[in-house]
Length: 449
Image 1: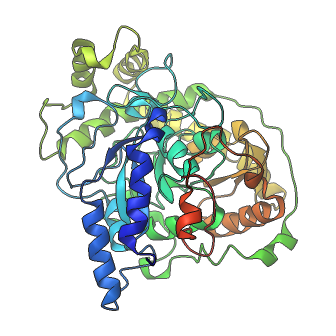
Image 2: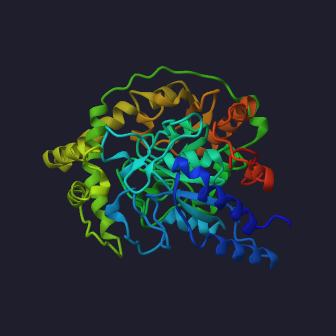
Image 3: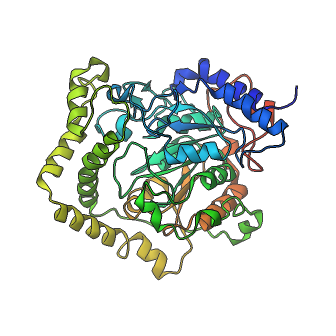
């Protein structure tokens, strides 16, 4: 039997339904996935290709809303049964490109905004996600399930969302390529929010080219998200992120290292703590079904404290307590002052001042040094595997410089090929790559489920 979308989707569904769930990476399967696959097969038979991702199975972090039979919970029972009026913009763009949204992945509950004293990858609805490279591995977070699922090939790629490290850190821990786009390059409409200044949605995949295909499908302006109005190109002139994966660019790759000292992190805390309750209330106001009548972060806290399934006794809400303290004592003017000060320290006086002053295309840094400042500035970062233990090198650039960044990352990937040198301890009996022989495009390949 030849390759069909239905067959490919079926092959991905089986390990999700079976033993791989010991890692608790995927919390929901789309009940319509196989039906949609058959429809895409019929379209192809009739000569219609929906888009560059025709038939490609993609998983979404369970903070990225879809208006289908799946839930949108952010890992909390407070949002079980909640419905949105339409797909989030990034989900709608994936469907338009022909992708099949295969399911939802687990995350650190409320995108790690609930508490700092519980493990990455834990949520009340999804339990504890574990990495696949050694027993009981910390998957990092908050896009934990997206990282583990992509690394094992439970879909050919996934979407994560980041405020401060939530794409980059699980990509680092799970031997993946992760792209944290410039804030505003991808819409956050109907994505459970943390900070309007820092939230962004991006791809997590096993190769740079696969990540580039996925990024190309989800970028562009959106009237629902005014940050996308800063995009310096029109929707019909998206940069060629896939074309940037040019092997000849390898000759242009230069190694560099910089030592960073983190400063003034208290500014970022103030900005995020004032953003979060306001952004969340706005998200709740857009729900068409809201079974538990969530209207504010205070409502979420009360629900979490009273519902035994939320395990408040062992998974506290101290982050929310800090948020209430900061938001109640900080005026709009003070919050804005902290934000502009943080931009200054992170920008001209910090990392991106160095880029400008030394006429650098990008910087290559260990993941741990490349999360905070780009988060503050809304600048892009790409994470690429670099070592035997899942460990990535991150490349950073000024805002909307993704095309050049992807080219540099591809060159690094092709020169090193370190991802192929490390395998997870949990190995499937049959690899999807062996059976169907494809990735998302030219950049696809073997690896994982």
